[in-house]
Image: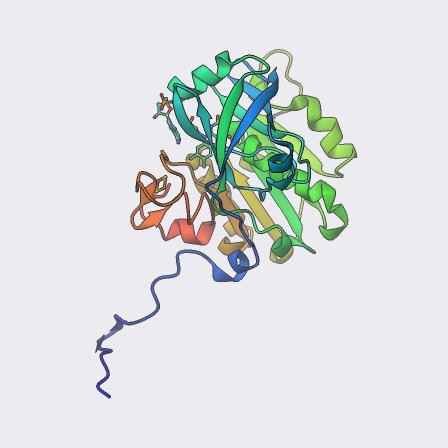
Length: 305
Ligand SMILES: Cc1cc2nc3c(=O)[nH]c(=O)nc-3n(C[C@H](O)[C@H](O)[C@H](O)COP(=O)(O)OP(=O)(O)OC[C@H]3O[C@@H](n4cnc5c(N)ncnc54)[C@H](O)[C@@H]3O)c2cc1C
Ligand code: FES
């Protein structure tokens, strides 16, 4: 039979497509994606800074409430009736079926409307969507959770997961940086994370105020304060894209393989499920192939960060 394969010197045009994600770890991460919609009641709103609020949502239908499940790193499309839909990371414990926690920054049209919503108001969610952090692949290793500013929102889900399966992970470090002390979110949970979850927490701010007694500088300064076996360490890095480069390149220099570092990419999204092409980076759908990517894949995605 005639072989349709052809090669050019130095190039094999029929080679496997350039792997956009590290198959090894992602395969182990079974992700549930569904376009189901759920009506939710806002049961509580907690202002956690001048710009961010934590919303506790409860799926109205008790059967759907028990069936809803997600994996750390996944996101929802949140609809504020009459205003529109926005993608928001799920910031809660996936073993808690009673409440879904969303930490939302007031950015524009839809998020501002959400900020006006009172306790008891009804909103809708669709999902969960996207890829997740491969928590099982990290078992038996050290885990670095690195968050910048609002990046702590997606980091809370893997943090809860680790707390629930604490004996499966070695040393867990949570490194959290913000511009100013008032932008360090969830400070009321810091003690719980350290004592109950046995996580070593380190915080740092770029611009201290008079009351700040902690560390000052860039988040990478925290890595000099402890040592870890880079060959047995995974990292989850969430925050502004500029932080990925600094943190991941630094960790690469320390010997953590790039396919053991995971970041969550944010793009404008519309459908959340690979139909509208709004979220595309090159030929990659951020909503389907991401938002969680290993850093090796991100490095190979032109204009991803
Ligand atoms: C996977 C994913 C997870 C997210 N998780 C969270 C979260 O947990 N908490 C949270 O507060 N926000 C999160 N976001 C960002 C959030 O979706 C946007 O802030 C929101 O869509 C803004 O909508 P809006 O109508 O309020 O603002 P708009 O009126 O649409 O825009 C206001 C401003 O926000 C910017 N903006 C809009 N959408 C995005 C976006 N997707 N990424 C970056 N900037 C944007 C616009 O450029 C503009 O400057 C996430 C985004 C993605 C893609
Ligand atoms: S958001 Fe529509 S294709 Fe990704």
